[in-house]
Image 1 (tube, rainbow, N blue to C red):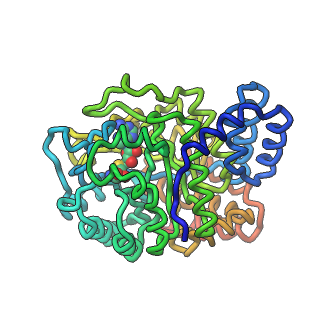
Image 2: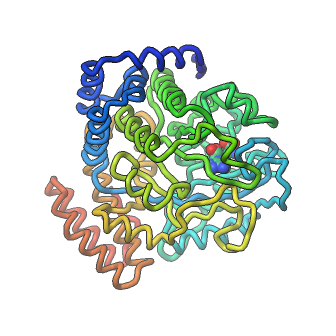
Image 3: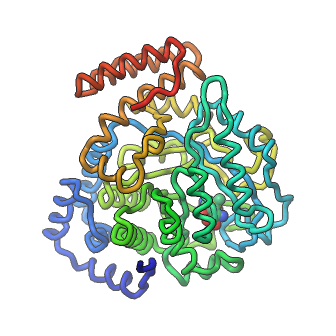
Length: 459
Ligand code: SAM
């Protein structure tokens, strides 16, 4: 199998060339996107370079249409869980940089249980486990123990049903351990696809090895992990270069393993202990950020897109309309931060500090249906199989009812009366939007069963 690589000259050349695309050529690319066919990286280069307001308006309009047709009005919820801030790397932008002096922490299994208890009380069912890189203080067996501890916890009303993992690039052997313990998606941000900027930012530690980081998903796939989630830390290098890198990475995975990214994350650089944002000439402003999110939505319409609490409420609201399908809520980005909020040592500062129920109410007010569904993974709808179902348009019949039942379960278990009433109104409206009679009947029955005390009902 060929390994992922990046040709810097090729991408720069492509960006130059794309400046010469005619209005007609851009129109053709947009027509293709409007048929939900996705775009190749050359077509993406054309959209990144267009300055024509008429084309940019159309990009947003198509992004909104894709979001509506493929994802409907549901939005998947998750929370990050930071288990260790020990780190041997010197990433200039990151609060965990090993030259930053603060007392490092790693959760004991008892601490993990305490954190998960708080997260469960917030209603979360899906976590993203996060850690710094330290082969001694946070080796793969520790990560596997954390995951087992989380999956073993059962509460009266529920449990964490999917643990996605965002840990450093590692060996095939270690990825096999993650695969065996049943992780959801393996997430790794390339940070930047631009090698000179990568080397400028990663001054020391194993992460400095650009090629090893870039080929992580090849090793993960070889180890049997089927769902991988990519991303770029926007602000480290020219965003146009980054989007093309990301798209070429997706094409590489599709070519070699028949399945591209399961999700793409679009974090933007935030202030953190030890970094100074004025050192970063490529910070992405809101206007460009919205445009790049919409372009990614057009290029890979069937890939979930994630934003975190790095973005403000206002920005999240706008991004939800043009492509984002997963968001975090009530996040704490400190190790042990959920059960002891006075801790210091966050990886970065969050921009949205609302509680999950506030976030849910805000989503509902926008006509959206927050979803705690984890069914696909548990039903074996992963990797290539997941993409096939999605592309054939079946996902609507599964995800929409599952969003409804998981939201109702959440309201019954964690909401007060006012919130429950609000959710019942949503369900009344949404049940009529289920097209197939049989699915509508099953969903109505499941909603009733939830009221009678049954839990974890899904299609
Ligand atoms: N240690 C693992 C690695 O090296 O890939 C896991 C990464 S860390 C827990 C999660 C992500 O946070 C990083 O990949 C990085 O993109 C992001 N991050 C670090 N510092 C940040 C900052 N100042 N602002 C926004 N995101 C940041």
